Length: 215
Image 1 (cartoon, rainbow, N blue to C red):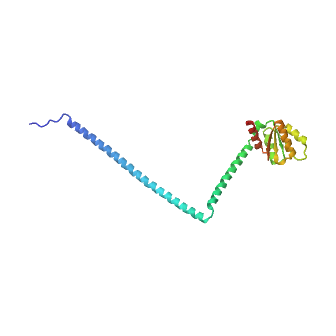
Image 2: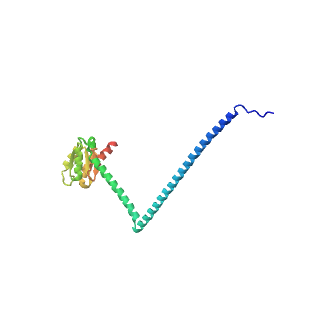
């Protein structure tokens, strides 16, 4: 009696399957080895991060202890530190404002379209403020007029200066009542712009002109 006959090509197919199985085992081993190496790297990184965090927490704790000891040794230290920071901010703010004022004062060409060939009358005592106004007006191409506005001064001269002026600056703190009301009455009757200031600073009346022009 004959045994079972082998199927044609079975041995060849079996060998091919074994070869594929071997290749798959190799790839799985490579992947497993790579994953193990990555896990080891991440574990080492986690250890380093925990150590760094521990060092930072220790340093922060020491800093807190040192600060508490310093505050205990110097009564009112937190308030002093707060005031010091506030003073520092205020000093910086004042410096910024001074710098902005200097930048505006050294750029008189920006005033030229407003004051070129215009007459600006300043009513009030002469001084540093009037000198600044004169310099800015003349640098901008305008003509500067001045009247003291004191008791006993020539009223018709003030009226003539008011008529000749395109813009009037009145120093309210250093003119007589008569001069003040003369200025107010003239500007009200003629519709001429009148700027009331404590000191005739150029930037103040320029801002007033810009505001009037935008209305």
